[in-house]
Amino acid sequence: MSDRSHFFAHLARMKLINRWPLMHNVRNENVQEHSLQVAMVAHALALIKNRFFDGKLNPERIATMAMFHDVSEVLTGDLPTPVKYYNATIAAEYKKIEKIAESKLIDMAPEALRDDYAMLIDSRTHSEEDAFIVKAADVLCAYLKTLEELNAGNREFTLAKNRLDKLLAAYQSPEVDYFISRYVPSFSLSLDEITQDEFDASSQTHRDNIGKNDV
Image (cartoon, helix red, strand yellow):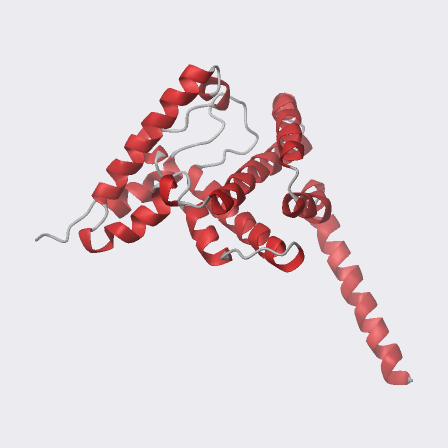
């Protein structure tokens, strides 16, 4: 039995697939970097749900699922959202193509590890709750991309932001709302602004500690 596999070489090509391909981008974003950000946000959403909203999720599994949520695109490419969801027929057919691509990738995985990767790649193995967290993180990261582009003066992303605003509100998810209200505003600030805020908070803590020591 040969242990050779092209699986990991295929995954490495995620960095060659640009997202938002029909839109002007101030900064291009590839699928690999997007997947890492989705994993980080999904991990945070799971932690928030567990800590504040009586969740019983596994943040580490969800983060790993998120890392693999777009791997089928190394075979299909990234179909632009306006095309993918142009009508119900196209959306349904593209879902079928995604499933075929997922199966093909799983078949490429080293035989000894195939079942492990199938649990990450095959969306049919994901619980509804886990899948929702990954999807919400995916949408949140797309929303953050629109903020980045709009803050750079790129009006091309105005309608995309409005659409994602409505989608996130429709989730009616406490963990998503928690993340948006507390952490998303920082993404519209400059490096100087977020650095100054952290410096001010650190200085205040230092002053408070000195005051306590003087008592």
